[in-house]
Image (tube, rainbow, N blue to C red):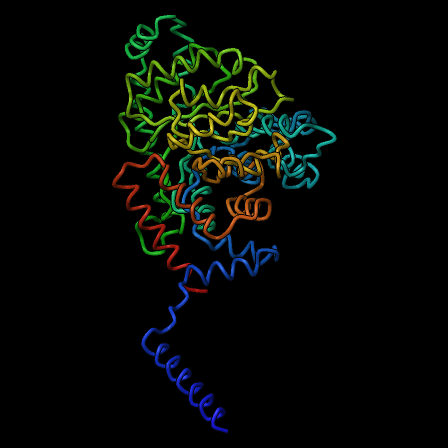
Length: 472
């Protein structure tokens, strides 16, 4: 009986001590971030709830986005109708008037003929693509020539569409690739011709009409943004959500055209980025496996090296490694290293073939050390290259500490969006909520915004995450 009293007394003492401890040191409350992470894990295997979570989640920036490729096919049909264009039935392309009812009907005929309308949407995007009939690579790159005519003079409309969609996806910043001179620099390069002396060729271009092209670019950007601001009512009561999405531009150089035109475009990109803060850098576009792209690749790197020395503050991001062994010969799988070491790329677009480059582990360590970010486009790499799942190097980049940001590439052509890119990353690579926040933050940290604007963008992203997490 006495033992029982002692035991009972001891228990009472322990309970009192535990109660006192809980009073003095209350349990730490679970942070909003951890609550959000718990909810994320609870919906990881429920696709519809996961999609809704990711759509509402702040996603920072889209750093790899081709402006014309970001526009949906339906818009090009509408603009073709408004512009009085015709449809070449045989090629599913827009062509200039005159039209004829049989083989070249007016674009408006697509609104009365559902079959024709479907034919156009399929031709302008990956919507109707069947792998057994045509490679994704060929179908994708053929779309631009089919709808291109309808996009003439519609840059402001394209920007409005892309910024509005980005707002719905909870993005705050875009770096958009396009050629704002409409081919003027390329034409000047053809006119003046090639010179093996890069310095003399630069002088000839600047003296031969490039100054006028540069001046016109800024004027056109002024007009384009004024139109966009007016139509979206930016700065007014009831402004459209897209007004809140900041946009900057990357001058795109066409790597598949003659070398004199490539140099002229490169020089234009470096010059305009030095003069107009809206153009934050340059990139090279067109299929990386094209004949000219392959044949002149090393020459292009020499051009970039030369111009980088003259314009060291201009940012460079390059498509590199958007290749597979089925597209090119094995000895051509070296573009990522060359783009970083010779082309001075601060970011790489795609980087799919990294493990097939010479000494890939050393390359990965170099990219991690030098903080070369990879713009990863999962949907694009799947439909164009057929690379997905464990064949995609995203986990490899993450393993080696290479900075990564997800991007859409051409969301209109691919019929995708940034939410889908995050969905693919989560479902395929089992990324955590913390991983997703790192990807979003990297998209701002490695943007080409000036330091003061980047700091403000980072603050906004943090505030957006804090607000997002409060609901959980």
